[in-house]
Length: 261
Ligand SMILES: Nc1ncnc2c1ncn2[C@@H]1O[C@H](COP(=O)(O)OP(=O)(O)OP(=O)(O)O)[C@@H](O)[C@H]1O
Image 1 (tube, rainbow, N blue to C red):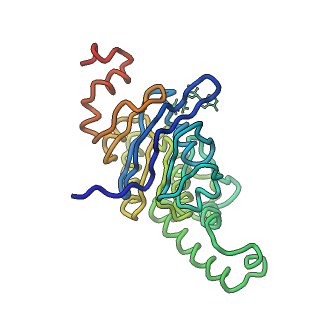
Image 2 (cartoon, rainbow, N blue to C red; image 1 turned 180 degrees about the vertical axis):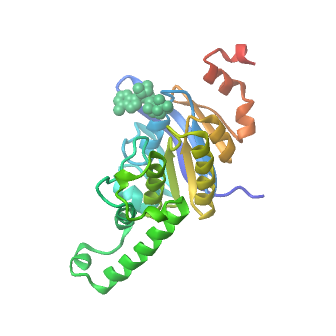
């Protein structure tokens, strides 16, 4: 089978915070249609990489391209418009809004309707609003919380709030959805449901990047995995290849590579 084209290309990415090199010449691709896992021990540079991809940090050197466009100098909003969405390690919902409203806010962030059109409720605005309402309900159904669309977000269980975050990110109509530790604090049953949801997201034609500490989940749901340690890429491959990679085993056990093999 021919390899899918690269949707996101991280090319020799280096990012320094003062004297600390958080990313050191990291190169990898995320291919269209895949679920890619980004893993590594604490402090390996996963979140920094994520933040560089999503416009929170600018690289010291190297490049990140998304769908052929360089992300250099782009702000978060402009990256969302290109088609990249993310969730956060700490849930960031509008707690005083309903579940449905939270998803609609996500859709509005992507809307092509101008402020003027919205202000005067012009036909294009009304059509867009009806379409985003329908899409928001569809997304709530997809993540499994449609029945609770009228609840305040704050009243949802922790697991459902995480699902809502995913629905909200999907409402921006992304090509790539980046999930930052979506299973944090989940019990095994919730992790199982999350795996099913991640597969459903991909089946909607969305490429997925997953940063996650839970190995069982990462191994169970990803197509490929990239491993970072101390800011460097130490391995890349299928879950089976990564599981047996001596450098990865050593990184996780904190022993020398030779001792681990
Ligand atoms: N804003 C910052 N300023 C200075 N140092 C930072 C900053 N953000 C991250 N770092 C440092 O960069 C390194 C990589 O951190 P990062 O958070 O990317 O790791 P991580 O792999 O996401 O870890 P974790 O699994 O613990 O979230 C760490 O040494 C961290 O202390």
